[in-house]
Every structure is written in C-alpha cells, then in structure tokens.
Image (cartoon, rainbow, N blue to C red; front, top):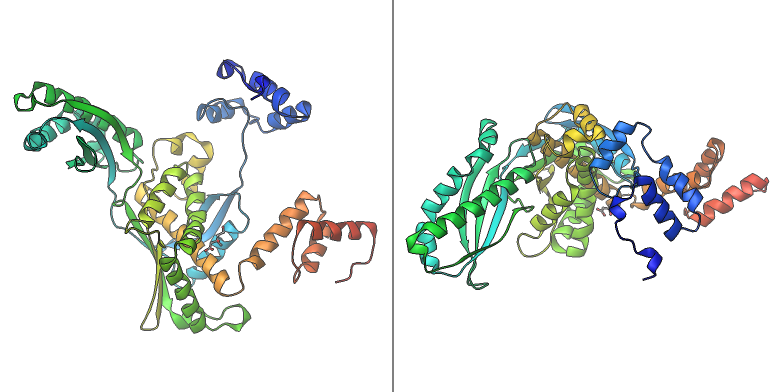
Length: 445
Ligand code: MEV
C-alpha cells in the first residue's frame, strides 16, 4: 500500500483534522469533498455530539430516508409505522399492503415467547461426571452471586430463567458450555446478559478452585457472550380472509387464481433456498427498516432470522400460506430480540421520535409491529410477483430517482411519467428523453 494511505494516531486527530487527511490522500477534489462532508454535519452542535458518541472516528453523517407507512391495523389498533430504508418501493409497498389488509380485518399478532440466551464457553480437563454432579450447587452459586446485576431486572419482572450445562466434549475435547436463558423485559438485554455471563464465569472459576471433588481438573474459560440466535423469542403475524374478499387483481386476475398463485409462490420459497433467500430478503426489507428507525440492532435481527430460517437443516421461507375451506391465510413466525428501552432507543433523537410515533410501545408490542411490517412487505412483494411482475412498480420509483439525479423540473417529471408509462426505463433512455425535451426536438412515443 502507498505510504500516504497509512497513518498513525488517526483517532487522536480532530474531526476536521481527520477530514483533511482523508480528502488530501484519497480524493481528487479535496475542497469539494470537504465541503460535502461538512454539509452533512448536524447544524445543532449538541445533536452532532450525540451522533458522534455512537461510534468512533466519525467525520460526517450518512443520511438515510426516514419514511412512514400509515394505516397499519394491528390487533385492532392503527399505527403509522416509521421506516428507515434506502430502497425505492419498500415504503410504498408496505403502505399499500397495510391499506389492503386494513379493510380485511387487519393484522393479528401473537407473542409466542420472549426468552433471550447467552453462553459461557469453557474447557474442563477433569472428569465430566464430577462437573455434572456438582452442577446443581454451581447453578445455585451462579444465580446467587449475580444478584447485584439481576436485582433491578427482577424488579421489572425479568432476570435469569435457567442455566444448563452443555457437554460438547464429544465434538471438541474438554469443551463445555453454560447455556443461560434470560427474560430481559423491555430491553434487548445485550449488556445485561453479557454482564451476567461474565459474573457466571467468575463464580464458576471460584467454585471449581474451592471444590475438593473437582481438584483433579482444570477450568479454562474461553468466552462469555450472548447468543443472537433466540429461537424462543418469537412473534407471529397473520392476515386472513375469505378468498372472495381478496377481490380482483390487475389484469382481471380473479381472487381464486391469485390465492393459488400466491400460495405456490410461498411453497417455492419453502422448497428452494435460492428463492427462500430472496423471499426472506423481502420480509427483512420491512423488518430492518422499522428495526433501524426504532434504534434497534438490525444485524442481530438479520443474523437471528436467517439462522431461524435454517433451523431444520436447510434454509427456507419464514412465512407460510394455506388455503382451507375457502379461507386464505398468510403468516410469519419471526424471532425478534428488540428493545424499547436502553441502547440507541433512548439516545438517538429520531429513534425516540419513532417510538413516540408508535405510541411508545413496550418491547412485545414493538415485536408485533415489526412482524406485521415484515408480513406486509412479503405480501406486497408476492402480490406484485404473481400479478403484474415486480418491475412495474420498481421502475416507476427508479424513473423518479433518475429524473431527480438529472435535475428534472416538475413539468419534465410529469412528461417523463407519461412517456415511460409503458416503456422500459433506463438511465440512458431517460437522459435521451430529457435532452430531446430540453432541445425542443420531437419525441416519438
Ligand atoms: C426486493 O428488495 C425484494 C423482493 O425481491 C422480494 C421478493 O422477491 O419476494 C421483491
């Protein structure tokens, strides 16, 4: 690597110092880039300090669109759902599916479970049986010595649910784990869980060094960390109605034909992992957008969702569809470890506003809203795929983006929308259209 691309002590530079070094060494047009970087700084210094506090080596902000999908009726309550996403059509699709189901009974959701997990991985070089025999006393000590961490959570109705000893020594010599389950109430619980796990490791070490029956072995704690896979923190979101109430679809497609094609589309996502990945991606378009808007950890949610989708040994659809006795039912089971207190939820000014927009839900209600949005997104995508095809809607939004990037006026945007109604949209085609329009040349439709 060239030497001017390396630096020592970068983190010690001021923000302006960092920008100066970056623009001088990585960009062709330092002045313009500096201006652009600075233009995204928050005009309010205090707000900027809050944003800078979330990360390290910050030099600017990266704006993302903040949209809302109104008319989400979930368990009889109406929500306007905040969504942070950069992909065209996602918010429009969620809004359209929400409106569609609003007149067909809305979304019904159900919390199946809320257990979070963590693991202490360690090597035990002594007799496994002795460790197992001592485990009831070990567990008691672990829970007792963790009281200073769990006391507040217990007041809120949460705490440690269980600690199991898992013997993995048949897979890897001497390897054991403590599999620990927790109820973390309205917090996602990462800090709480990790603190408990580290305390468990200390208590385990102290038990082993003081217990005569374990003196022939050696304990070596490898790591303590929560698991982002929470298959027992599940929410279900469902929509259902009589087939005839599905109404008619574009191109005169009947409700019957639609329902059959829709169910086939879900079946394909159950059978084929190539389709399952795209199908679930559509679900996460909605899920991630709300997760992000409410200051939750979308990487954790994705990691968990995809692991859950592969829980039976092959990657499959997270949603299901049945047609029984003339009733169309479509639902989604999703593991969602989210919080409405702690972390970014109360620190990020817009995350706070998102939660306020949703009526300050508790974590279970937020799970329900997120799952309903994921299901709406999945419904909208499949509805397009099995009727008009996805490109029609996408291209409309794509056209808008191209027009904006080419500085089109309102009048030009209107003319382009008419012209491209039945035509293939591409950047060059739109540019050519605008050039002709601007030079007064005749445009042949
Ligand atoms: C695009 O972001 C999402 C879709 O591909 C989802 C799907 O195919 O179901 C439209």
